[in-house]
Image 1 (cartoon, one colour):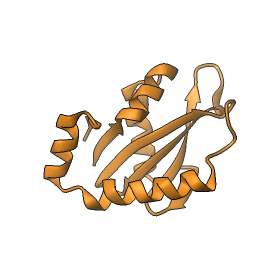
Image 2 (cartoon, helix red, strand yellow):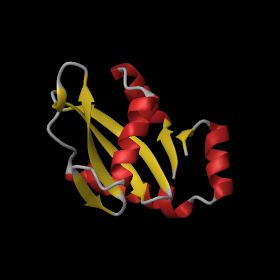
Image 3 (cartoon, one colour):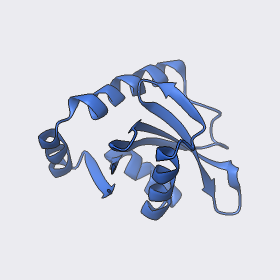
Image 4 (spheres, helix red, strand yellow):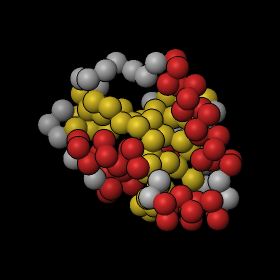
Length: 123
């Protein structure tokens, strides 16, 4: 499975101190079916622990996922900052998931990487 993070996710994750090894662990869990919510359309929600706070008081990650194929980390927020994403955001993420999971060929992925829109962090 190829694992990526979007440019906007990278900015947020860096600000919160979330590392690539933590993301790779989370991706492996998601691929095993260990996630908090399937929001539909390839959009999933996963909890990440925060140092000293555990998963319950940690982060929520929105990701686009197709089992054994591709996973894109799209958005992260601290549970203490907001309860959830809005219905409008959910619709927007479903549209984006369609592009990332179905619309991008291998050539398109290479172009997105070269443009800095995504970064591949694992396979």
